[in-house]
Image (cartoon, one colour):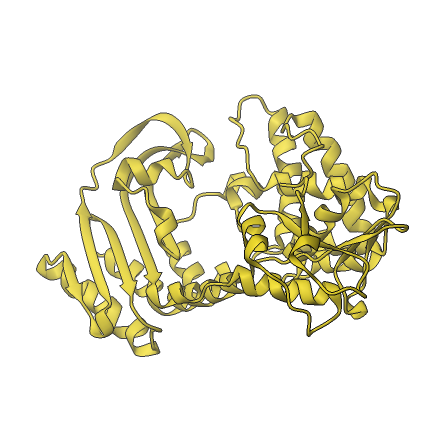
Length: 390
């Protein structure tokens, strides 16, 4: 959403945003939301509170079938979970959960409010329904509407060969939007392999023991099928049987296991099963950002009749994996900006001094260039504008 919009999550504000977001999506594809509602939710705690708690067999089946790779589209889930939350809010006996995903609904409402102010927006809107392009598309739309109410805002077609957005007609400037998505695809593929080939076996192995476990796996290179399917699960099984806590694998990969008591513990405050505070309480774990995939599981009892909330935690499991070979796959901001600059200038031979430009980029600015492309690009002609979006 744009900073100019009211960011509050008051139920009345969210309800108005849901209506606008639904109208926006229905205008693109009238039946899309209905079709998406039949798919598996990525966050059942929000979407289906009466079915939030899974049993161990259900979790094993979900891992084996790799259900986690094809969830409901994030845009659809944001809208539908917002509607579900508003229904829950009417029931005063149920504690309310707030999700950061609802800001996506507010952002869609912002786009709806500016539909008539942006030239060429129709073709971009269709990409919001794409699983591959929705993030970069929404980013472009929010950047564009952040410049309203300028006299003229145009989202240019992909076939134009130039920058994404044109601001102004008499003395226009252009904006090229770059989103950092490619690195995420590598991590998604790595996590998917891990879930399919290792996690299910590890889950079944730990199910044989009464203890709880914190298991950390660090892979130093691209793992092969044998390592994921056989070597890692078998090694974990042997470590638990022999009481070993750390083991090194081929290619300098490492596994560490920390056993925990599974004594039932009653929580002093109300939490959902997915609350990250549970990781700190029961595993003393607070470095989520250092791992590519984290799988927590908690056995216990739900809070009264609402299975979204946990009252007592007993046996639990936390499996973390990191692929250190992915550390080298980072994006060069300088190269991305050089590409964007040449695309804007429509001159592949243009050479610019990017030293000062790099300073602008480190501050999170959007780089824009004057429209006069007949002149050579010099350091003095570079300028930037702060986007009014979050």
